[in-house]
Amino acid sequence: MRIGGRLQGAIEVLSEVEERKRPIANALKDWGTAHRFAGSGDRAAIGNVVYDALRLKLSHAFLMDDDSPAALAHAVLFRQWGFTPESLAEKLDGDKFAPEPLSESALAAFASRNLADAPDHVRADLPEWILPAFKENFGDDWLAEAEALNLRPSLDLRVNTLKAEREKVKKALARAGADLTAIAPCGLRIPPGSGGDRLPNVTAELAFQKGWFEVQDEGSQIVARLVDAHAGQQVLDYCAGGGGKTLALSADMDNAGQVHAYDADRTRLAPIIERLRRAGTRNVQVHDDAAALEGLSFDRVLIDAPCTGTGTWRRRPDIKWRLSEKNLEERMAQQDAVLEAASRFVKPGGLLVYVTCSLLPAENQARIAAFLEGRADFEALDIAAYWQERFPSSPKQPHFTDGRFATLTPASTGTDGFFCAVLRKQG
Image (cartoon, rainbow, N blue to C red):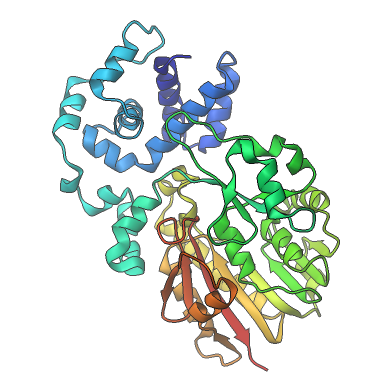
């Protein structure tokens, strides 16, 4: 396909996402099924346009004075893919699969408008109601933090040290451009590329089939490392989901001791069985019923709490525009319930590690403050000192707030957004 056909395909997918509120991945899959002539490179390029368009949806619309799918898709090519209106017009000339030309008013707006004149939430490409939370969380850095969330993410991998060494896996993935992560000691990173570039399908690699690595954002690897799990301990991964952090904990423990992976959602938990088998873990028990945990106590309890997912907006920009204040309130209630339930399993002297992939203080600092209020059995550790002990040579630092909280972000640590607090149970 030429650029015209790819542009038209992206407009069609954007229309499907916007009009029917469908997840991007589902809309792209259905478009590909209906257009089987499109090759893998074409589908990847169309997907890149769609994701780029939705990451910068508000600023694209402001500069084009038009929020239609066609205007957003054209803005991607003008602002991010190196085309000018003139050079793109030349490429589209005579292409029968190209979309209708943009209106003269949209082109005039793009030529004359300056993003510096836009409202703050438009410059940041944030829902307006979320802007105060970003300013609260990041102070003067709020715009830089928001802008970093609008960039393409890398493809991060965690080397499974139960089966392979980091350098061995890096060598096996050399053709994919894998290099060492900056902070996570078992991580590899493949750059995101630009324009129509497509990321490699690493799950098709023989090294993946052998269980040498898992796909896992570096931020997720880091917060799993902050659990500080050691061989011989008893560890609970509460809200384990698909098991990414469970696998990391098992490797940190060198398959010695026990990890209990629990999630009430059986659908989310289902992939863990095959992942455990491939990784060669022998110390993990999987539970979908909390009753199986009764009477147990643990040295470490990890809560990967349900949240709004604001820290994952680079990868899932469509959820940014569907998020509501009601969604946030629902998540906060769930987080309070999970904190209360999971805290019962921490043995005296043990650690409770609270993690979200959210950047909103209401889900993070405020939830820990509410949990600790009026109770003396838990205390929050000095997270900056705790971080330094575990990542002594890290070239990057998360945001530390109130001496007790750490927030990883694309701007500060080059990862997805994650919040972490470490609480110790007295006794």
